[in-house]
Image 1 (cartoon, rainbow, N blue to C red):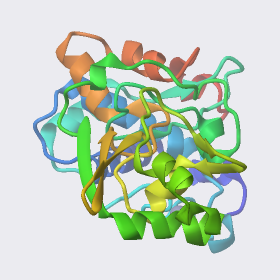
Image 2: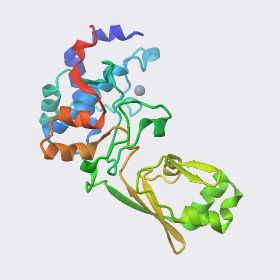
Image 3: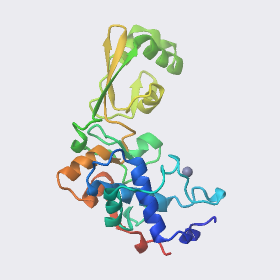
Length: 266
Ligand SMILES: [Zn+2]
C-alpha cells in the first residue's frame, strides 16, 4: 500500500461496516434518532476517505485509536446500521467538491468557533456561527472553581511578574466573554483562551471569570473545541425535524452532501 488508489482493495461493504463501527465507538448511548446516526456516518465516511494515506508508512489506511477515528469493532446496533445504510456512500464536500475536514465537538455553547482561531489555519467552511440549537442541552453550561493562587500563578509564570500587581489581577480575576474570543488581550499580552482551557482542563475556551473569596469561579459554555458540528445542537435539530443534510449544511458553511462515487474514481 502507499497510495490512495490501493484502498480499492477494501470493498464498499468494508467501508460501510467500518463507518458503522466508528459511529458506534464514538457516539455514546443508543437512544439517538436514526437521522443523527446518518450525520455521524456521513462525517466518519468523509474523514475516512479524506485520510486514506494517514498510515501509509505502516501499510494501512487508518488506525483504530482517536488519532484517526475510534474503532472498537463491528457495529451491532440496529439504528446505527440503519443510519449508515440510509446515508450509503454520502460524504461532505466543499464548493470545489473536495472532501472537507469534518470537525465536530459535543456542544458549541451557542456559538461555534472558527478553525483559524484554534488551528491557525483558516477554513472557509469552518467559521464561527450562532448556534441556538446547542443552548440548553446537557453540555451547554459548565462551572469550575480554581484556587485564586493557582489562577494568578498561571499568568505570572506564563506571561510575567506584572501579574502580581493589583491592576493586572483585577483583569484576570474578573473577565467576561459574552461572545467567543480566541485571544484575551491584557496589556502587552495576547493570551489564547484555548491555552487556558488546556492548562486547567476546562470543557471549553468559552468562559467568563468571577472572583469569589480565595477562588475564581469559571462559568463556561459548551464542551469541546467548538469547531464545526455541535453534536448536541445536531440532536436538537433532528428533534425539530431538520434533515441530516440540512444539519450538515448548517454547521459546515456552503458544504454539500454528495455520493463519494461522484468524485473518487475507484
Ligand atoms: Zn491514526
